[in-house]
Length: 288
Ligand code: 3HC
Image (cartoon, rainbow, N blue to C red; front, top):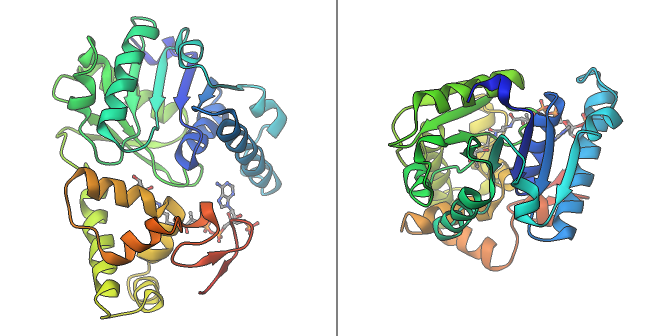
């Protein structure tokens, strides 16, 4: 399938990545249906897109009226209804392989034969997800970064059986929504960015768990010495502490105690109002 054949897209997941990807796809001019397993989650994601578009519009960062962009966004809870007439699916479900494989089995059954199935997984094997389908050559990774409206890069990842045609179409689609794709031709855990970023976050979490440094010291050091836009703890609060937790669990890696404690107490970052820092209305940072 060529990029010009893509008219309608489904995004599976309305969480921070799902709704952010839905937003950039809609800004890119495509009709997009955002699907999650509960209406409440879908509604929250929809509200978040409206909020974000309003912000972008006030700052002159999008040309179109937010209402015109929203007119291209629809929502669904029923998976079959969401994907039965789409050309591309971008799956942004939780990072659990068993769950993903169930979803890919369903997608294989419910989507049109020509549809490309793309995963936003941050570290799981594209090859293994593709094995749940009869079209592994049409399964590819499209890994966005948080927040998708502000992050330019998207990794386009080959599974072992992904065809060049599928990867090229996915890459051209990413360009068509004004993002910069890079090919990742080896389906290794964490691909390029997270295979570097993961150990960075891990080292920070172990240093704090073992009492070698404080959260504030590590973040300040990385911002002021390295020039990063935010330190590893603030970043983890933004992406969701549970995301890194599940990635480590799936990989059978030891979990730093501070991460374990945050997840046990449901302090997952901005989305729950508290993580390594506290947040007012999911925004302005106040130190603990
Ligand atoms: N839509 C619209 N506006 C948004 C927004 C969104 N989704 N999120 C935040 N904003 C707004 C804020 O409300 C604030 O608005 P205000 O100016 O009216 O108060 C403004 O954007 C924030 O602007 P700032 O000037 O403070 O910040 P910047 O825009 O310069 O940068 C950032 C924000 C882009 C998030 C920057 O801090 C950054 O690059 N951080 C690192 C992000 C990163 O590395 N992401 C990758 C994470 S790893 C990942 O995603 C992998 C995955 O697999 C887990």
